[in-house]
Image (cartoon, rainbow, N blue to C red; front, side, top):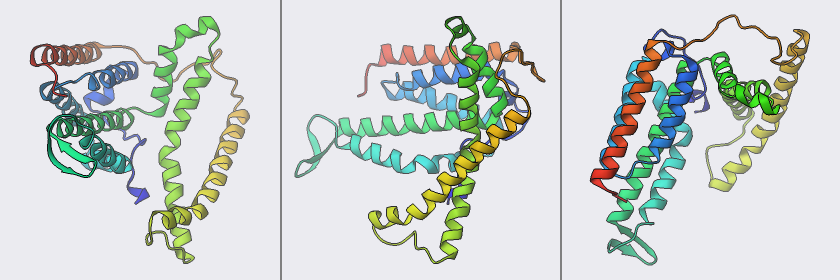
Length: 270
């Protein structure tokens, strides 16, 4: 159900991950995304998976919320895995017509599946432990050097934050609209894929109307509060790096080093 989707929500807490500087979390997340797709064998992939599990444990967010965040992309994960399963090269261990399964294809499917799962879980950890305000502040601070070329840093950061903030809101709105349509006799769960897609049309139209209405209300509220962008604005809470952030950077550096060592000495699986 749509109501089960928790991606994009923020869960207040006092865990070690919650207390990290948002800039540090954002930089670590970007570095982790890069290193996930630089894993070429199972040992390197195990290092990234262990680092992901460590961050999930330290976040102290119930594991059920992470599983809920996977519901959004479970079809994409399965589809990508199946495609890579038949994409391998070498002698087939099973073949039917033009479809064949090789050990190389199995390795590819496993590697891609674990990579995507680690990517989604790590991004969920970032949004679960970092409020939209902190993310906006972190993005703006990290992009501040671009002001020298008159790049709209604050506006871009604000748009990204608002878009992320309204993911759970739109999910909740979608669920309400679907329940209302079902109460009126709409059938959205039976039939083939084409029929189900057609049944979603009565949901998409009011959803877009609601989204535009919320955007207009936000714009009006910001104008009523004399919002004029980032020039001269102050912050109620200031962010600063601490000892725990340095330790977090050391941890991601160790992960990067471990992946590099595994790639060099153990070679390439796929």
